[in-house]
Image 1 (cartoon, rainbow, N blue to C red):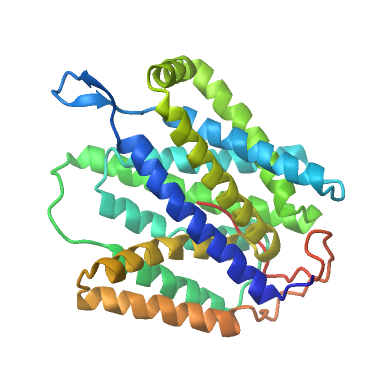
Image 2: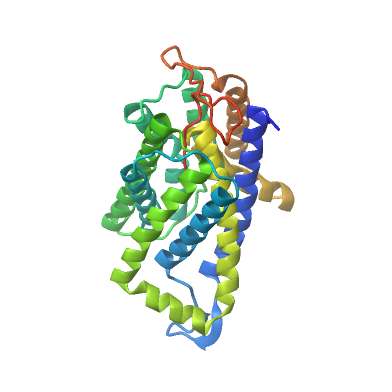
Length: 343
């Protein structure tokens, strides 16, 4: 069945929203919960799961297996993408995740939220400079409005811990590095799509393959693989949480790569950034929290920008020729606006 392009985009976006909403709940339980009854040195009861590399590695393995199964069940044309392109894309993606995780140790949470909410901007800029992508002025305005709206809605004033200037600066530098890596990831994906047009499943399989190798090497160097295994043996319930997290992550990444392959890295980064906004908005509506005027302004900006982008954002800029390539997994045209990535 040939599903209209807009309908497919909505299906992919809803898939990303739902999967990563559940993913967040399980991740919160896994990373912030306590395991066991042993009293710690600070007087708290139970151990915490602190093995970030192992956590991401397990997800990458499951994502690779998931994509491999999909490609086995429904074979597609051979992926002619150069392996070096996938390796570079995986490296920048992993560096972005690691930089964000490290930055959280030195900057307040609102700063990290504001920083990562600007992700579509470097994706767009580097997509133009490196990925040779061209966007309409309407799309530039819509992306900037969405980012501004998310910042206005999610930023929370209030006292934060007094951090030394040098550590705060380090955290901000790490956030800048993370955003730069996000932009490079999107730009490399643009080049991959322009050169060989791989399907979402093929991109998912190859990127997770390289990510698994890189993280495995890092865990061997740090000794985290042994420590994380001992933790899981001591607390078997961790396996259940890891399984649920991997399932939600694999399905979510499946929708992400479908979005990247069919609509581009920018569209994907807009969806993942807007997801944060809708998650908070849903909690406000469900639990009756009061929004201040600034947050309502942010909500109006996001909704207005999404509506305008839906109506006009897909129009080509004069310099961008329309691609008419067919892709076996699409069943129809790939528009020139099909090129973005993860979060």
